[in-house]
Amino acid sequence: MHFTFANPTAPKGGSLTLSTTFPIRNFSGAWGMGAGPAPGLYRTNDMLFVRSADELSALYGLLADGISLSTDQKSLFIRLNPLARWHDGVPVTTRDLLFSYNALKSFSPTSRPYLDSWIESFDVINDRELVIRHRDVFTQSNLLAMTTYPVKPAHYYGRGDDPFEVSLEIPLGSGPYRITSHDRDHVQYERVEDYWGRDLPVNRGRHNFDKIRYDVYQDATVAREAFRKGLFDLYLERDIRYWHAANDIPTPRSVRLLKDTRQVDRIIGQQWSLVFNTNREKFRDKRVREALTLAYDFEWQNRTLQHNSQRRALSYFSSSMLAARGLPSEEELLLLTPFRDQIPERVFTKAYQLPISTGFGINRTALEQARQLLADAGWVIDDDRLQDKDGKPFKLDIVTQHPWARRILLPFIKSLGILGIDARLRLLETVQTIRVKQQRQFDMFLNDISFVNPPMASLQYYFSSEYAEPGTGANLGGIRDPVVDFLIERAQRTPDMDIASVACQALDRILLWGFYHIPLNMPEEERFLYWDNFGRPDDSAAVYEYLTDGQTRLIDTWWFDDSKVWSQ
Image (cartoon, rainbow, N blue to C red):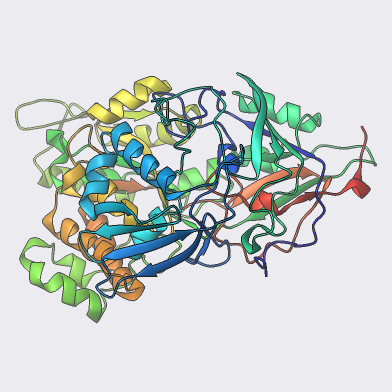
């Protein structure tokens, strides 16, 4: 048995060199201030369960080899694989799971209330068995969370060290690789020959390289030149300009530079959107938020700047069955009708859509609609400046940490200028960005609001009233809506995916018609180049996996093919 997207006869050996933009600062696996986990670190430590890349929500055991749910669906029993070992040979036990659970609650101020909200107790039965007792019915979201639950070795940290403290000390792991060298500019992993899980069905055909190295390139231009020189093996191109032009380079006959794309259905939602800070007085009026949404000419920037490569995200769950379509279904109406007096009538009578321009010139029709909405909200034009009834001008700060975003935001600022709005772009450094987001010190913020599908575990953190206050979560817009809260709870509490999908579709409508964000593009297809040194399985079915660093990577099923050795 093996995953269908892996080749169980793939040879072991060879080396893979990759690039990363993140300096090597942290091996704890946790996110510290400006110091995320080192790239590829997930390869050193196994999780309880792994997700399949060709199934939406199917899970398979890794550290765990048994699982069952009580008849009242409130107690989850987990049994550990008796073969599971840390790299020092010590067995992985339930003591490690309990230690990690307690450490995680102590480490993060946001983890404790989240865990306490759904876990009543974490009880060890013996070295291999434990039970997680839940306050409510156990849901699919709870189970998916177990695929990211970090398991740390209790005996290694028994001296009182915090396993989640930012540190460059090489940790003791249980996974297929271990760290063998590192500095600020690189980290190298080597395959563990006596890895305990090498013969498990979920690992057959995976983890094929003897060595995997990440070199740090903080500048994308430098990274592209290094790749073309052959200093690393694969490059994920995020700038569409270079995909269409600069990467078409001549190579010697003995060298083959390959290009490929993949659409990854595991990532859904809005890859980028502009978030309104509804704590600001001017954005408490929905008409103002709608007006600015109409002013963004997506088709123009897509044609002129993106080679028409983008698709607009007209849903918070785009590219999935959770997205609202057309008018509400009968099942959605059952959820929404009791709140009809709190919901705009057009939620029930109109399908959500935004103006579609020709992509040429100024979209005057949309700007005229925006100007009327602003006038209805009490904003008037005086001497080409938009101002309120007291004569206060409409000023706007758009904040981002991404220099590349200037090219898509500056045309939007120009459109806002036509409406009389004094808009400015503010570019931040990483540490500044963390503070600005936590304290909500912005008018509008360019944010990534894409989710791993299904997204139920993230809904509360991103959209609920509970996380609307500064410093509490990812609800940067400050959304406070009892209907939203109800639908989130409905989606999270049910173990039935069909019922959860209906709740998400209804939630999508409420959020869209609330105009809390200006939706930009859906998650893009992956565009990558690689030197032809490798064998690849037929991965066309692996649509729920991605190439970028995450819990797992599709590239973990590739292998080095020594028959394709090339020289410059």
